[in-house]
Image (cartoon, rainbow, N blue to C red; front, side, top):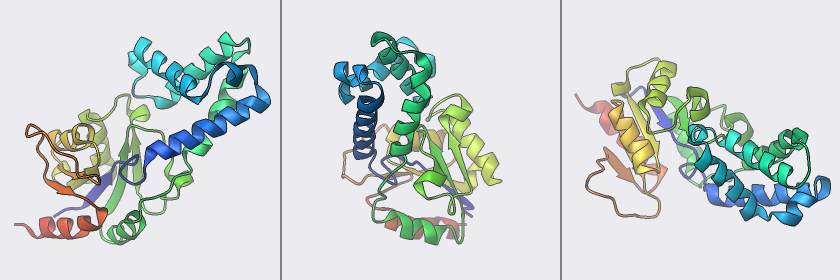
Length: 230
C-alpha cells in the first residue's frame, strides 16, 4: 500500500525560471531605490553571477541557496562601498518575490484529491516556503536541503521524509522533474520515483524510473494501481 507521496517543488509544481527572473527584477528595482550604486554596477544577470561565483568558491554551501544569495549580495555591497547591513533586507525582498509562484494548471486539483487519501510532503533543494506559496494546507511536511545539510539526490533527504511521513520508504512515492535529483534519489532510498516529463524530453537508458508522466493528472491513477498490487 502507498501511504505517502512527496513532491519536488520548483519546475514540478510551477515553472521556476519566470519566478526567479521576476524576483531578480523586483530586487534590482528595490536596490535602485535604496542602494543605487549596486544596480548601477550590476544588472540582475551580474548579481546572479556573483551568487554563482560564491558557489564555485564555497562548494560546501551548494545546498543552501539562501546563503549563496546572501553571500553574493554581500560581495556586491563590498564592491560598491556599502556595509553588510543591506544584505538581509535585500534578501527578504528577493525571497518574498521568489515565493510568488503560478502553479501549473494540473497542480491544485491533483493535490487536493490526493490529500484526502495520502500523506503529502515536499522534498526540495530550493527555498520555497509552503505557507507563502499557498500549499501548507495540503502538505503535511516539507524537507529542505538547507535543513538537512545536503541536497538531493542524497538519500538523507528522502529518509527524513519517511520519518516525517511515519512510514517506510517502500510505502512512499516521490514525484519530480529532475531524473537524477528526484527519481534516482528516491529509488536509491527505497521509494518509487516518478518522473514528471512535461516537455517530452528523452531519457538516458542508465536512469531508470518507476513511471514517467507528462502531467500530474496521471498520478492518482498510477498510485491507485500501485496500491492494489499484492
